[in-house]
Length: 165
Picture 1 (tube, rainbow, N blue to C red):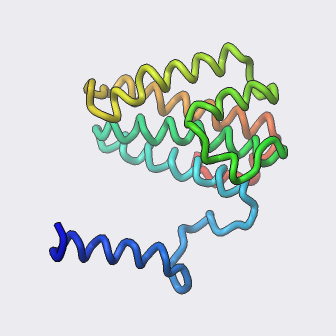
Picture 2 (cartoon, rainbow, N blue to C red):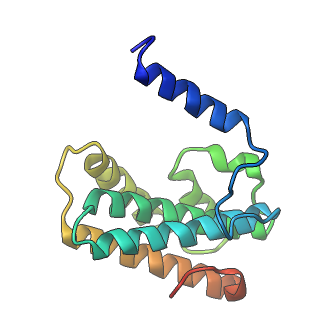
């Protein structure tokens, strides 16, 4: 791929991430509070998942976006309440579930169930070891919506949410 259009595309992508001045940022994410960034990323992921689901397909992407939206929603709470810092967000995906249980956002049993759901299903769908279904996509999107709403209610910060629903 060296010295080809792929190499040129890689060079362009590298440059785009180095140069941030003058670029158009995603609306609603231009906040300085790290917690709000995570909350609003969750909102965006949920909206994208809903949009793709309405297209009658894209089950794998809907499932992946739903798992990530759950993580971002929990990360929002942890950051907002001072239980984590921005650097803490770069850990293993399922660690956020355990941290949520540690701060009594939900029970240890619930955290374990989320962890098992992620470990037993997310990777298999994502890496196409199994074919995603409409029912799985719908269930994951419903779960992500429910977790997101629960955390907003628990934190009493619905006014910071930019979800369309």
